[in-house]
Length: 135
View 1 (spheres, rainbow, N blue to C red):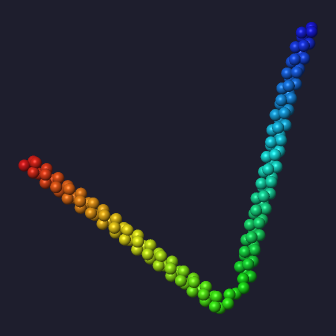
View 2: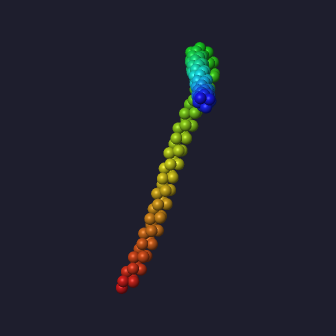
View 3: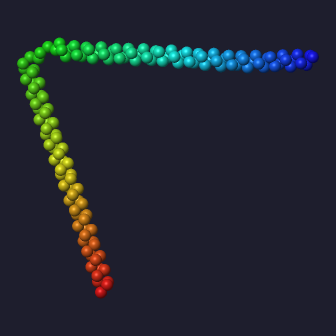
């Protein structure tokens, strides 16, 4: 009967150890989940604050645009000259870009034409040699 009692105590100790380990694992996982939920909530709040800041900046910039003071006539003329010269330069750049592309295409075509002529000459030479060898 003593042996049975000791076996029973060991069995209860093992069960208590398993239960203790399970409780420790559950508590640590619960803490991790709780920390994750807290960090998610904090991130959501940060995102919300950033959205609000962006909206405020947008409203401020719209307000500044609406409340702009008119420029003096001299500065308005200078600004229109700058805009005109910028558009002229952009037009020139576009024209030069198309000119470069056209010349590049022409150069590629000439190069390809020269290669084809060279190949044609080589083929004609080989054809003449074959005809000489046949005779």
